[in-house]
Image (cartoon, rainbow, N blue to C red; front, side, top):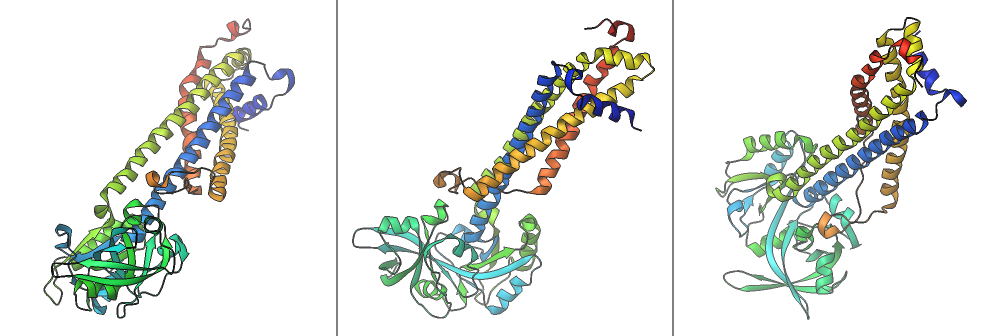
Length: 416
C-alpha cells in the first residue's frame, strides 16, 4: 500500500469537523488559482493558433506558399513574363512536397464608373487554378471558369471595390489599361464579389482570365507572370523552398528569361513578423498563469501544513519519516491541482467551443484581418498544458514541503 497516497486521500476527503475551517478557503483559493490559470492558457493558445493559421491561410490563399517567376520581377515595378508551359508546370508539381502548381499573370489597370474610378491589379488565372480559398471568401455571385485560351471578360472583385464604385453582381464596368503607346479599354461583367478582410488584397486585386491579362500585356500564350505553388505542410516550407531553388532558380526558359522563386514569408514579411510576435506573447502569458497557479498552491500548502501540525507530530511520534509526511502533502496537493485542472479545462474548452460555434467576440477586420476572434482547439496542446501545469506546480511545492522536517513531535502536541 502507498501510505502517503492513502493518508492524503483521507485528509482530502475528510468530512465534518475533521476538515478544519482554516483549510477550506485555502484549498478553494488554490483550486480556483489553478483553474483560472489553466482556462486562460487554453484560451490564449487557442486564440493565437487560430490567428496564426487563419491569417497564414488567407495570405497563402491569394499569394500561395511559393512563387516561381522572372528573377527580375522582384526589382521591377512592371510585370515581366516567364514561359511556363505544360511541361514546366508538370515539373513544378513533381517537386517533393508540392501539392499543386498554377499559373498567374498580373497587370495594372483602372476600373471606371460614371461617378468614380479605382486603380487596381488585375490577376489572371486559368483552369488549373485552385479556387477553394476564393469560394470560401465569396459573398455574392459565382466564380466563373477562368481560361488561358479565351477571354470571357468576367471579373471577380472585392467588397471594398464594389462599395467604392457602387457595383453589384452582373453589372458591367469599363477598365482602362495604360502603357507607353496607348490606352486600351475593356468592358467586364462583375461575376462575383469576395471579401478576405485582408486590406492589401481587398483594396487592390481583381481576378479575371489569364488569357485576358496575357493579351493586355502583349505576351505570348505560354508566358505569364509566374507559377504559384501550394505545399502539403506549411511547417515544411523552408525544406520545399530549398528544393524549388535547387531545381528551378537560375534556369532559362525558351525566351532566355531567368527563373527565380520567392516564398510567402519573403513576399509578406510584415505579416509573418507580426505572427511571430504573437508567439512571444503566448510564452509570457503561459509563464504568468503558471506562476499564479504555483503561488496559490504554495500558499495553500503552507496553510495546510501549519493546520496539520498536530497530525504531523503524531505521525512522527509513531515512527513516520519526514519523506513519508512530505509525500503525503505532495499527494494532497496533486488532488487539489487535479480538481483545478478539471474545472479549468471545462471552462477553457467550453469558452473556446462557444466562440467557435457562435462567434460572440467580434474584431475589427481592418486591424486584425478577421471579423471575429478565431479559435483553434488542439487536444494534444491542451493535454501538454495540463501535464506541464501539474509537473511545474508539484515541483515548486517540493521546497515548501520540507517545512514538515522542522516540526518536532513534542512541541506539536501543544500546538493549536
